[in-house]
Image 1: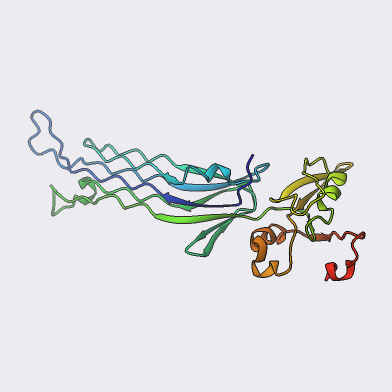
Image 2: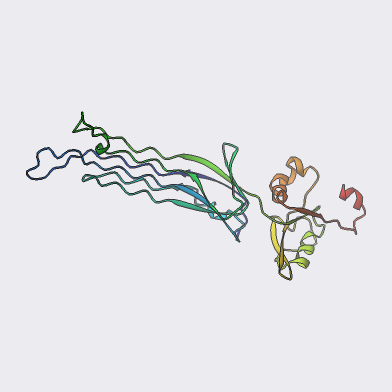
Length: 253
């Protein structure tokens, strides 16, 4: 599965259905009174973290998500059905940004309401009173909320492996875990972050192998920002050094 750690998508919750303007009409009943039903609410947009998913590749080609609109109210006091909700499945560690502002951080499998659907409109039944027995007033359904949001994945791992290119991080990873990381005698063999699980007895530790860092990575040089964010959540970091290099101390610094 292709590793994608950032995606921009358009999301819109559903519009609410309109209220109905209707009057009861039956044989021998000349003034039946109002019987317009309410509109249904629009569909909500939910997000939910999924274990075992480590990429945003599902959002590479499908970039528009619109929840269904609520059904309009009808006569005989029939209320419209609510619009169908949408649940977006995201990898654990995904952060959601709107206008560069963090609005949600997915760190559990709990389903979270991101955008609420519009409220349904009221039928004319709701406006009947002692002074107005035949109201012709209704309200329209509220519009849903729409926005362009950015998903940014920060891998969740116990330990992160960092070091210069070709320092031996992937080889170290293969010794500790069953991860199928690519190993080669040249720089930048690893070009995307990899996750592996180290098991000892009943305990497990998740290890993240990120591509080699170069000088100035903390300022964004060489995709530094994209790589470094994947070790921000790590509780510990292992710095891998190649002791066969002549400048071990300068490499460490």
